[in-house]
Amino acid sequence: MFGLLGPNGAGKSTLMRTIATLQDPDSGQILFNGMDVVSNKDAIRQVLGYLPQEFGVYPRISAIDMLHNLAVMKGIAKSSERKEIVEAILNQTNLWDARKKALSTYSGGMKQRFGIAQALLGNPKLIIVDEPTAGLDPAERNRFLNLLSSLARDVVVILSTHIVEDVRELCPRMAIISNGEVVLEGAPDEAMARLRGGIWSIVVHSDEEYAAVSGQFRVVSTKLLGGAHEIRIHADTALGDGFRAVDPALEDAYFLALNQYQSQPVA
Image 1: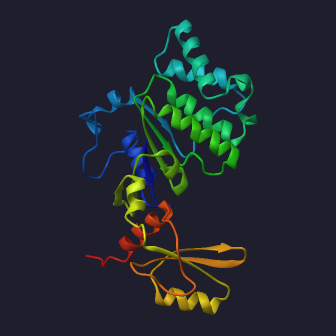
Image 2: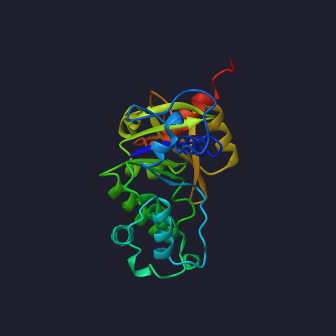
Image 3: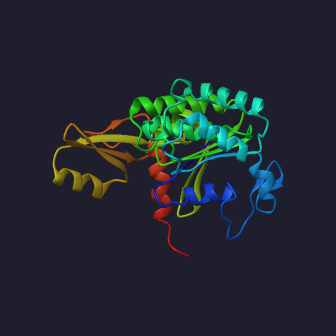
């Protein structure tokens, strides 16, 4: 599983749509197993499963009927084969018990799992999922991430998201993009290891303290902590009283990569 991280508007969905052959790139090349994606769209679509950020379904149709219809469109014409495939996918995505319910009655997490179910039709070799956990509650998010993790044992999965923790939990490799450019690529653990000994935290309780710290040091991120501000700072040496060394998180590497890119002078 490969994670693609970036803020809203970074170009993640555009890249996913281009890989999925829904739009052509302005320049450059996309290869899958040595095959040019742009010039071999039909061949790529035969091995591709795609769950876009937003997808529509007929609300009154049941999950099992919808999958049968989609399977026919995928070229699975033999009814016995189609029945076997659809039933296996419904069990794999834990939707068997709800297979006869209208899709409009599904929760957010169930709809996303149905999205994966339709992406699995045709036995794909590559699955693209775009912002799949946005809006899910913690329990639904965990169920969905566990499903993705199990799928990644057998196929290539590209996970596009702005949720850093999703990538930290699932992906052995990742890229961070901003404004359509890759600003960091590698393993999440390696990105965090490079910051070891260089991330410091301080909690401040007033706007004046916050302004003083942020004006003096290289701030990585801030967040509210019990009504106060926790400020995380990148520095190679100890910072003195009030500061404590903390273990780096992938979020630190993410914000630093974005900050470094945004601070570069425009050519």
